[in-house]
Amino acid sequence: MKIQKFKKRIGLIGFGCVGQGLYDIVAANPHLGLEIGRICVKDKDKPRTLPAAAFTFDVQEVLQDTSLDILAELISEPDEALKIIRAALQQGKTIVSANKKVIAENLPEFISLQQRYGGVLLYEASVCGSIPILRTLEAYYGSEPLLEVRGVLNGSSNYILSKLHQEKVGYAAALEQAQALGFAEADPALDVEGIDALHKLCIVAAHAYGLLVHPSQVLHFGISHITAEAIDLADAVGARIKLVGTIRSDNAGNVSLQVIPTLVVAEDALYDVEAEFNGVEVNAQFAGQQFLKGRGAGSHPTGSAVWADISAAVRGYRYTYPKLCVTNASVVQPEEPITVLLHAPQSLTALLGSLQPIAVHKTEVSNQVIVKVQQEKLLEHQELLKEQGVFVAHLPESMPLAPVLEKFTAVTALLV
Ligand SMILES: NC(=O)c1ccc[n+]([C@@H]2O[C@H](COP(=O)([O-])OP(=O)(O)OC[C@H]3O[C@@H](n4cnc5c(N)ncnc54)[C@H](OP(=O)(O)O)[C@@H]3O)[C@@H](O)[C@H]2O)c1
Image 1: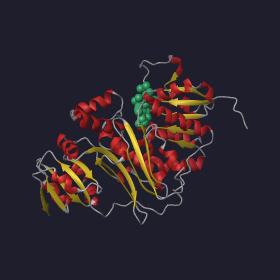
Image 2: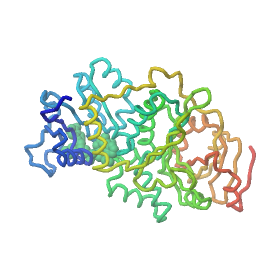
Image 3: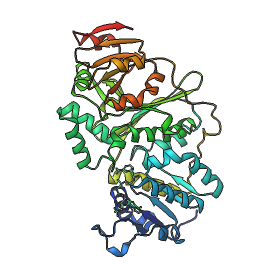
Image 4: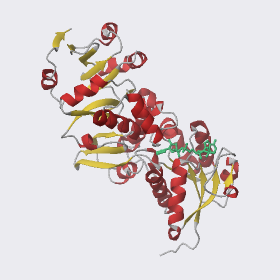
């Protein structure tokens, strides 16, 4: 057995929430053969927890330092992060990242750079913080066909939804609390518009189904237009609204993706994923259902995922994307209609004309309807729905519509 004599040196780029978390973990475990060799940050005037001499402000000093064994890209600027990851891979280096936006939007390029130059890119921390979902999908489910992967993938949206259900605070106050606690991204729109969850879902699709899906192809709604009435409706039927990302394959092996607020019932594993926690349910053809739950964000939980990637890379681990070469699947918009709750700040008449629903149920709340609609119509008009401030929530097929409607005495069913 080969014994490692020297510590592997990490070039740390970014020393914010996650970078500091990684630093703390590495510093607390000096016996494990890792050390932070160099740290790059941006702001020269910011007070730091380490002496000024520990930092550089020139990323090239880290990228060109041949004494570093591995790089950790943990910065908050996606454009700069893309340049750093690209430059590292073009030099055949090993780099880990937590940046879901950059990974989701550039994965095909990153895979081809790794193949061409022999470098390694790992990014477990980019999906669900501390939950080891990517390595589970790669290593354990690398062969088995998956029927569905779904989850609560965004901690700050989930924190806000928990507050709305439990404390009946307003949306703005709940968002402020999420930001104060450091759960929200620098740009909270990424969280509350469902974009962060969308990025994570696209990354999961590569490992779970071997599909490289660009985020722009996927139906996604967030929670920014949520209303107290929608929360009340969910409460009245014993459900909780969760922002759920789903990848599902049909009998023909075609795969659909969506991110949408969903009424989740108590029997559902996602029901008890509360506050900043994330949860992912994997439904495999032979293994059946499995569920992982954990902290989706935060300094040490996310730092722990980065640390796990660094340790794995040091031991020679790399993603093999086992399903990428064998998949015949393509991304489709499912043909069957779905039932959604729509609540708008103004009349929905014109929008319903565009959506051409199969059925419309009015509730006693004005401008709130439950409609059955083709998913491709939702995709086609998703920007219009968002522009008009409409809150959209999915009522899953497992939740029978009749009991939902019975809770609303004034509900009328209008067939269109
Ligand atoms: N926070 C979480 O819980 C969490 C969870 C999962 C994934 N992530 C991802 O992890 C990454 C880092 O997030 P964070 O929360 O740690 O961000 P953060 O607290 O805002 O810290 C960002 C760090 O990046 C540095 N930075 C920004 N632009 C830079 C540049 N051009 N060159 C060098 N350094 C630069 C900043 O430098 P200064 O210190 O000088 O400002 C700061 O140290 C993001 O991609 C985020 O999406 C975060």
